[in-house]
Image (cartoon, rainbow, N blue to C red):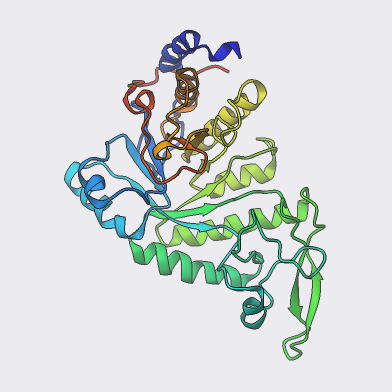
Length: 355
C-alpha cells in the first residue's frame, strides 16, 4: 500500500506531532501528553534488577504484572518518582481449569453451556471454565478471591480483565439451576440464543461491567479490559456504557489487527475514534501491535514503514492517557525493542488532529 512507503509516513509523523489530540477529562492515569509512552503486556521475562534500575521512564503501565515484581515497581517509583500502574490479570468470564466433573460437583449452577446443554462454552480452546457472570455468587467469588485475594493483597493498582467482548462469540446459551431452595434437582434455564449477535447477552455483559467496576473502584483499584471494540459501533449504547464504567482498554487488535495487516481507511478511523472516545472521558488506551517475528519475542522484522505508521497512528490518537506496545504474535513479556518506538520524542500536542 503506497501510504506505507516510509518517506511519506515520516512526514505524517512530523505533522501528527503538531496536531495530536488532547484529553478533555480529568484522569487517574499518569499523563502521556509529552513524548511517546510505552507499556508492558505482561512482564514475565523481566527481572527485578531491570525493573528497578533499567526500565525506561517512558513506561507507564503493566498489563498483567507478576506478583513477585510488584515491590520492584514500588521501589522504582519511590526512587525515580515515575509511577508504573500495575494490574492483576484474569479472564473476565472464566475461572479455574478443573475438569467439568469438578465444577458439576462443587458449583453446578455456575457453568455456562452451549445450547446442546452438555458442552461448556469454552473460549479459544482454553481449559478455564466459562461461568455465568450474571450469577451474583460468581461476582462475589470474583471480588473476594480474585480482586481482594490477588490484586488487593498483592499490592496491585488495578485489574486486567482479558478477552472482553460484547458479543456472544463462543455461543453461550444457558445454565442449570436448582428447581427451588428446597429441591436440589438441576433444571435447564436458557439465557441466550447461542448466536454471536444476542442483545440479551450484550446487556448482561454491560451490567456485569458496571457492577464489577463499582466494586473494584470501592476497593481503590482501576479496571482495564482487553477490548478492541470489534464490529460494535462507537455510538452503540452498550459501547458507551462500557466506556463509562471501565478505566481503560488494552486493545490487543491494535493498528495491526492481531498481526495480520496494517489498519487503513475506515477501520483505522474507527480505531482512532475508539482511542479518542476513552481518553475524552479520562480513561486510558493501550495499543498492542503484534507483528510476524519470533526473535527475542519482538517484531524485529517489522519494516520501518510499518513502525512509522504505528507511531504516527499512536501520536494522532494520543489524548494524554495512551501508550503503545509492539511484539511478535503473542510474544508478550518483554519490553519493546524497536528503536523508533523507544527513542522518538513526539513532543507535546498543540491541537487535536483532524481525521
